[in-house]
Image 1 (cartoon, rainbow, N blue to C red):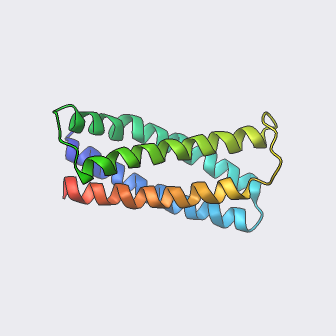
Image 2: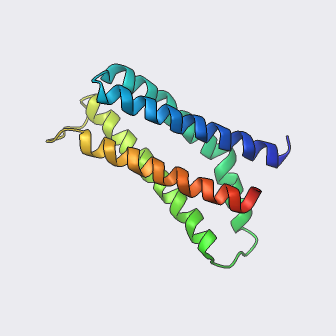
Length: 134
């Protein structure tokens, strides 16, 4: 498959995931937490798979050619770090929900933080998509 097609399909997937993120937020806001958790437990592994199949190889191919440090390079590194941070928050919330980790406070703050970071990361990823692929 052509790399441009693969990247475009990933971008469309990312748009769908942001739509699902808003749906999950709607479910959480309306206290349908079991459905919210189900949606999130599907979305995050899909996001991890998309990162493993498309984003990480793309980043590695871009950076292995001795690319000088530019604002775009810094944006890419920040985008990847933010994505990892979101996954760490997701793991933490899941462990707390399962009772494996004890938390003293409600999980509302980390969940809202993950939501906000996901939106910021989507904006960064969209910017990089338009810079590199259009």
